[in-house]
Image (cartoon, rainbow, N blue to C red; front, side):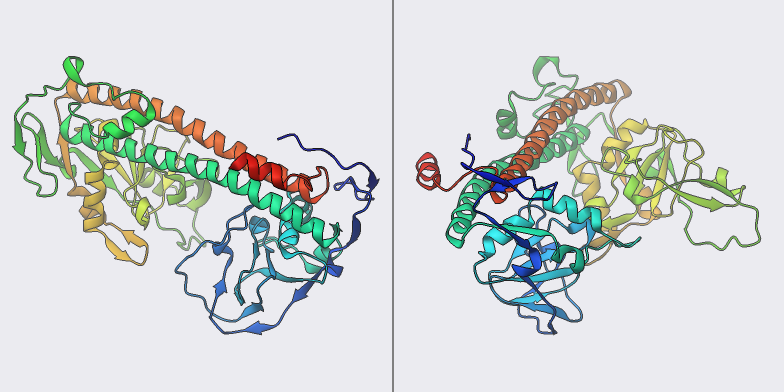
Length: 462
């Protein structure tokens, strides 16, 4: 969309703001938005930082239980998240309620259109300046004293409303495109899970997800005469009620017969007065589904003799003890990425001795293994954990080695294809969000003139 610029501009006197339309007014933010501080313990409509989507300002419903007092707000007030990671959480209140947590609650003055004010505070340049002002080592915050003295640029109320309406229309279109890409990411995850689960429990014949295959372009490889599995191969009862039948020539065993489980070290042991060494320490956050996130690895002090007890070995299959339901049993293979690295007690190191690490890792990530982990776990609200004893009882399916190799090769090819689609969709979402932010910033600072776009954009979207 090519939009015109205003006919005349003036220097705002603010480096990051640059030129603004000549007829716009520049005031300090505190003259257009008043800080509210009245507290209330009423819980008619509590809003926390987790209820606001960053950069879009959309409200996200949660079932969080709130404690303590909140800052009262009314319809039309603007909630600005003041913690550094959440500065781009800016909500326009559609009804009265209570802001629970770290917010600056702001009330627009007469002549300031609330929706326009929200978009101004969501401008990426504005957020960038506020981010640079935050203070505090553990939880950096934006002070009201700094925020209050930032520039607020305003056309008249009619023009503010026109700009807000334009941004509402255009961001809705962008958000719809983002939602389509996010739906595709969900379908890709479902496709990956269905393919892995079928391959490690039935082999490569009659793979499920024909509708997904069509959506992603072509059917799965490994079917038909070139499949290493025999479509007419006899089946047998696995002996596991929720697993059903498996190929008759596959072995069904338990994890404890093909691998050992090594528990990790607990943090917080008192080492005062003892000789210690400092080593890398793998946590649950480092063990993602199918890969390791090693950008931030914690260090820990241990006694020297503990290194051999807890050191990870190449080929260990890492499984998380618990956390959120989606983290239960989640794992990846350790390939010796960091020397002398140990693991915490919430990460199990499963050490195969009669099965390949890659096959065991695919088993652990399958639906049937996840079903098993959930069924044997201790559960509380949104959390679950599983013991090493229960992990060792996980049923493990073992095709002949050559068939394992063929299945793993197929899964490598399929995952490469799905990864490419995933990366493409992720990039598209990133570009759309950048476009959204750039459009908001350009409109609320007058870099583009959208006053005459109402009829044009409505016609284009019809």
